[in-house]
Length: 157
Image (tube, rainbow, N blue to C red; front, side, top):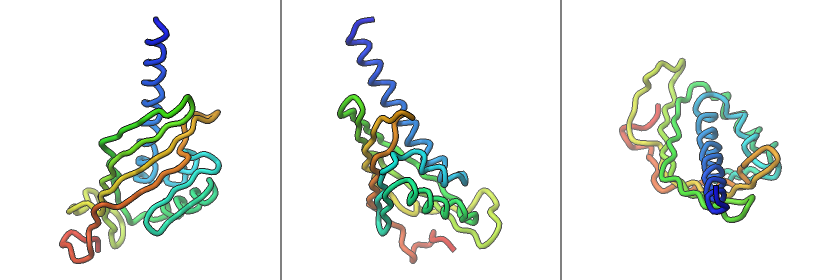
C-alpha cells in the first residue's frame, strides 16, 4: 500500500470513529443512558445550546444524569447530513443536522407514542480532539432552526 493510500485509509478510519461517537451520543440520550454522555467529551469539553451551557465532564454528567432520570419522555435524536472535516492529525470539526422527535407521557411510556411534527430541528457544530481514549467532543454547539410551538396540534401533553 502506498503512503497516499495509507493516509486515505487513516482519514477514513478517523471519520468513521467520529461518526460513531456522534451516533453513540444520540443512543445514550434516547435509551436512558444519558449520564454516559460525559465520557464522550474531553475533560474540559463544552456543550452549548439555547439556554444551557455546560463546561467540563462534571457539568455534562450532572445535566445529562438529570435527563436520564426523566423516564416519562420518549425521544429520538436523528442526526443527518453529517459533514466531518479533519483539520489536523488530532483535530476535526463537523456540522450535522438534528431532527428531534419527543413525547412526554402522563405516566408509563407505552410504545408507540403519539407522533407529530418534530419538537425541533437544528444543527450541531462540533469540534473534536483525539485523546488517549480516542476521539472525543471538545465542543458541541446546538442551534435551533425550527421549533414546534405550544399551539401546534402535535404538542406534548
